[in-house]
Length: 265
Ligand code: KIV
Image (cartoon, rainbow, N blue to C red):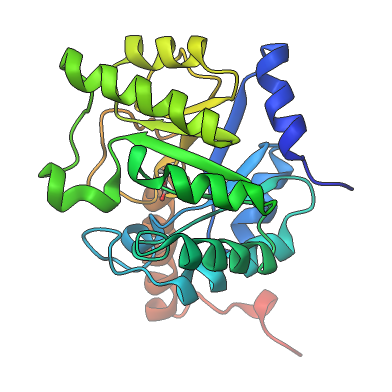
């Protein structure tokens, strides 16, 4: 079985086929995501929050991202795996960013994602120049949470909307293979999608994007520390897990588990 390629991913837009993306951080969930037939898996630095329990993504390291990227890449048979470059892995210099992006490809990812617009254009150009596909990420960019003052919708004001559109076009010109639009008004995301040749992947950006991305544990109803407006849980696995573990404890305590069926004779 072969992986979805970057040109095939881009062809989806030309054919008007929607692209479904979800994050994954380990082999078990990667196999489930693959069985469900989703096109792209993002090894997101959101793992800092949903796996490591931190309040933001800033402390996630390259080594941690590569560890999770290896697990996902080894399990993925068909999906295109994108590695999310963590804070400080691409901000310092073009040289470091190319080297770190290359390490994601060595760990099995087919592409990387970086946040930001104008400040990362030279990184995008350098990486793509060396054959490393890069996805951009505009709008609400979690690695800039201290600058922006929180996880807020971006591009409501005309000037900021114009800037985001301009940066999306600049990312495309620099060679980005696609762009994530996070927490921007639907009308802005639709305009960007219409103006770009590369696919847009929205999260909290409405239905006008070429595809959608969500954090896996949000889709499955596993993570409820906070649930943003744009999240739709398609299952309630936290409730199921709680019920299962409570019953297990009760049955151990009252001697119902293990029964003869779970014992060796
Ligand atoms: O880290 C992440 O999971 C992401 C997506 C939510 C786009 O960047």
